[in-house]
Image (tube, rainbow, N blue to C red; front, side):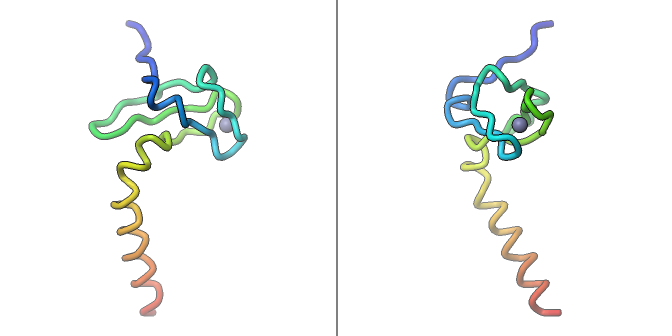
Length: 75
Ligand SMILES: [Zn+2]
């Protein structure tokens, strides 16, 4: 079985926030979810969701963060 390749729109703005790697050839797809993929940086081994997907799901994340913060502040 061929390893699934990352699509172009994903690799265009990909960046590892640990080592700063932006070379599309130095990332590999780890697994595919319904709404996003998880990639691994070949440089440092960091697993992350590419920025391409984070733009789509950030609202949900911000919402969760806001809720977490609200709960924290109430204590
Ligand atoms: Zn890295």
